[in-house]
Image (tube, rainbow, N blue to C red; front, side, top):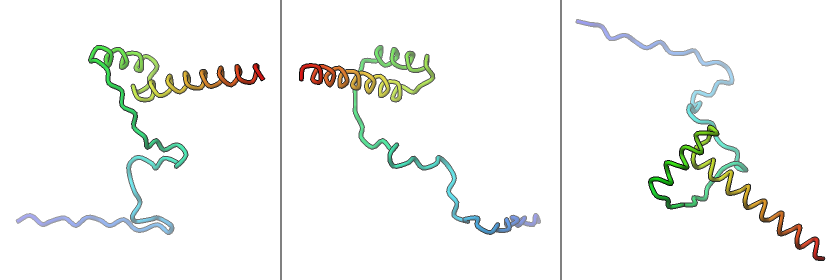
Length: 87
């Protein structure tokens, strides 16, 4: 007959939370992304996006978001400059 081995209990350290969570750390509220924008592409376009994103060590989502926001900010700056210049 084989005896079952008891697991050694870890001695609690003062200030150590026994319910400590493991895994991915929480994201700050200001950095949390909650809205999903869907973009439909062909399989060939998806492969092209994956290659472009991989070439700069980004995920497809991050790469698209980065380029889209850069473009949106350039358009907003150009529009503001035009409005300011015509006043």
